[in-house]
Amino acid sequence: QVQLVESGGGLVQAGGSLRLSCAASRSTGSMNTMAWYRQAPEKQRELVAEISRGGSTNYRDSVKGRFTISRDVAKNTLYLQMNSLKPEDTAVYYCNAKSSVWTTLYDYWGQGTQVTVSS
Image (cartoon, rainbow, N blue to C red; front, side, top):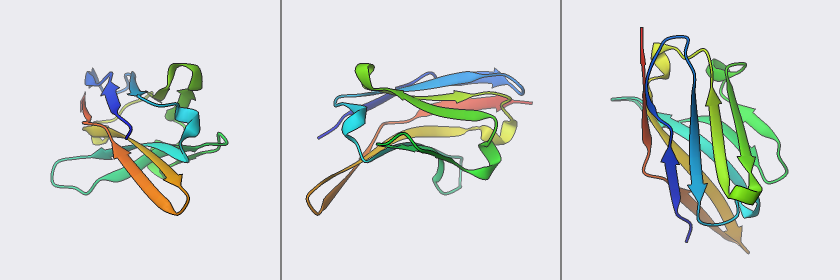
């Protein structure tokens, strides 16, 4: 079992920045992948950015060049640096971790943190 706790959300004006953090109860380096998802009201949850165990990253097109995902393995923490925020970035942001033991896959979620971008 892995507990994930997000923090860093809030209200910011368009063009501003926020950094989200996700504290994990286990080493982030032991996860197959870690990721940030978001869900806006009445919309489906969508992948924002992910980082693999090897450190490769992937971003959805709408955040490329503005958001950066990173992790501090020593602190068991995942980050999402968000710059040049837009009102359409408003959503609840969730931390996700995926691990596997033999053929069993495990999927863990945090409780979410609200990000609101005003125009």
